[in-house]
Length: 217
Image 1 (cartoon, rainbow, N blue to C red):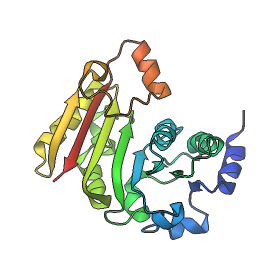
Image 2: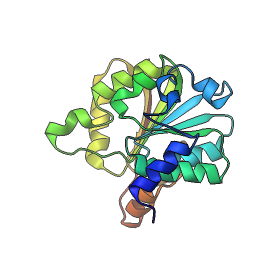
Image 3: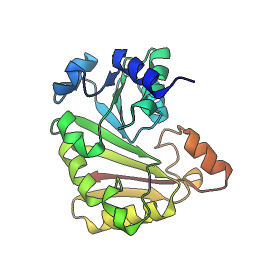
Image 4: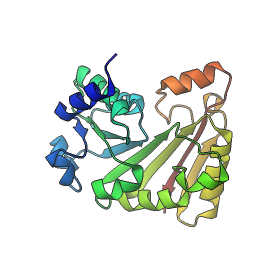
């Protein structure tokens, strides 16, 4: 198994990894179409981890571009490697904190967002760190094109219920669809039926997968 340092070194050589230290990192904002060499819609997976959803979406939708975002270089190394192995020119990985999203994407540069099995940050004191908290929603609203969808998949009931509370309290949100048991819902399929390692683990333990999607007005 490669060490973290070896993975970092490989990331530094890969075109599909955009990270601090590379010249492109400073100029990528507003220039993702040039990076991908096309004007296809750009969809993000936030907190992408090993990039399974990013790679899966890029495989299913060759006419969209997908960017997995995570701060951990050792994690995105795997997604980057898998995308290279599959010769996916429409998949890339960005190493930043999600709070820095507006530094890497211009206003309305993004056509959709996926949040797949994020850390639920269950402590009340950690609310602002939840990826569906109001402060993150404000960031998403700035980078998303009007009419774009945000999708959440989670095993965590508390995060699911918290997200619905936040959405119901917001005047900026509409077209909310949700289920606390995705596999038994009419919404099954909207999430593309990509199953991450985490999802498979939770499903085997009998934990229902929750799903929410919504738009900004």
